[in-house]
Image 1 (cartoon, rainbow, N blue to C red):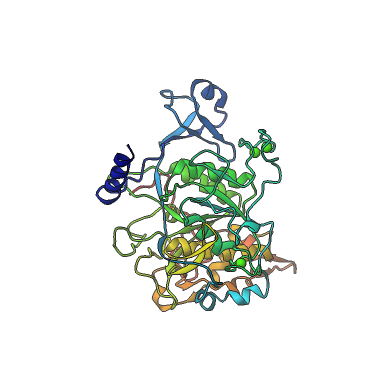
Image 2: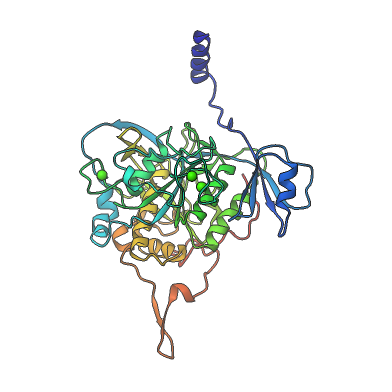
Length: 451
Ligand SMILES: [Ca+2]
Ligand SMILES: [Ca+2]
Ligand SMILES: [Ca+2]
């Protein structure tokens, strides 16, 4: 029996293409205003309602046409946006060349982060016990562990350190490495005489597992994670993944767009990876070939392209001045890896983590700021790089040192009172390509997006 299993495993690995979509697919529905949730739950098994989004995930067959349902759509597969390479063991490391490029040593003169700032990492999970992360993992203060009771009434029993939406359990540990690498860039514990320093030496990393060991996830898990993140007080969502494109037909992402719009309403920043070229191909221009969520293009988004140590776009990084905002290191960056290890990794996943880390430092200094100010702070201070002109909206790379010094322009009115320009000037929608634009536009009213 063992021989047969081994043979199948080897065949599966060497001959068959990886089948990415084996996770259980769900149906996503949105309720009408005043829709009757209880009636639906009485008729249908496995309904999980997401109160902050007004959506529900249904993991069984839905009754034919319900009057309470606004829309329904199929689950969509997603994939991680990193390209792992060589493994490093032992020794003490720093983030290396990224320091000079990003100017973050200068930022650290102002702040090294805030331990109560919640950053949600929607990924493959996080190694909760990594010596360089453990001290910065979010703890659900409203939940008493291991008493079999949902003490904070959030719908999840004994969830003390986030949630695993793939296996539906309270252990969002990382069986891949992707999420742990992302987490270390954002917030590996600094000044602890071990490993690396994350951009935030102290922060609250909320692990929300939305993808399996192979980096394959589903949009239904993302929606559950967004609802959880909102209710846990997250200020930033790191999305280092993309929806897997289909060659044929439209892919409906109405529910995901609805969820990201809810985040925008609440002033929660979303940092998304632009995505990487697939199957050995180079990076794509998102203006011609959209990747989601990057191409959703909402006002609370920052989208990251990957650059090398000279600030040049890496060959695999997607780009596009309408959807992608700025470059950040995305080539051979060292960070935490499961089992107290450290590894180098590349891709726009890494770049998104740097942007998230920078936004975290800005929020540590200005905890009252919303996504709108964070977007302006990071975009308007990006350092111009010739190679990025016309390829990302700002034409530049992240400059953390400048970002933490940014202030909204104060406008003096005739009566002599001052007000913040960032708050008083309406957000200009759909302004594209002007480096640096005052804010990101919304996606031109696309309610249904696809490939
Ligand atoms: Ca709970
Ligand atoms: Ca409990
Ligand atoms: Ca450390």
